[in-house]
Length: 298
Image 1 (spheres, rainbow, N blue to C red):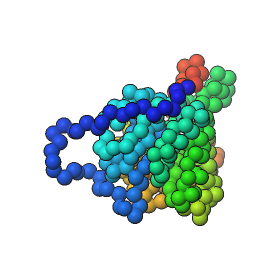
Image 2 (tube, helix red, strand yellow):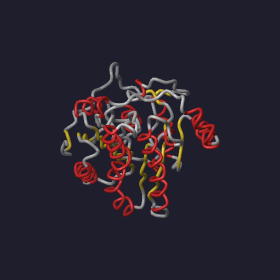
Image 3 (cartoon, rainbow, N blue to C red):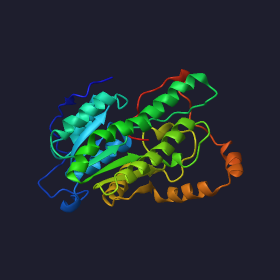
């Protein structure tokens, strides 16, 4: 496991053709609800990286967590603003994750934490070698989310403000054949975040669950099936930030997938089983390889 010592980030590079003109892009956050310091796991690529870009454009200082230090540094080099920190680690290493959180907290109050790191792979319970894949998916998608949030709860309670954001998935609405580990992990994320939200009620700390549908990221690029309402990752991130700022308890993005999710819950089990059994499945990892966290797309 990588240690959690912060990796110095190079000064942000000016974009090509930059001038002294007023910058375009997302407006600054309102002072009354600004997230000035945001900690994001899974920031190396995909959704995590896109959220980092959105928040940096709004003036936030970021703590960026991912396995690939080169990707994190490259991201930092393109972000506006100052005060960004890079932490190269595997989120399954709880001690390293806690050390990163404590370092970021030592620099000042933290206003938001986004647990975005996740992995996905096809799994079959009948294949003994897939057990370690099940374990890796739950460790990354569920237990690492707990480990991400826990160091920040006491400081946020003390300051009586902050938001914890769990990235779930529409795949958690019903069990998907061939993706039992992923579907179950994302169902667990929704239930866990709901439990935490109620536990923290009245403390000033909010909990938001964002459930992506199909988002164009490296993780979805290899899916062998049709992906309805596929959304560009930058567009997803912009909508997710608005949902977080509005303190939505649970938001599915894009919105048509929210209706798909509702309809799926209404389908009788017998009919769902018959239809889902013929669905194309996500490929299994060769030899039961437990993989490594794929940053940014749950």
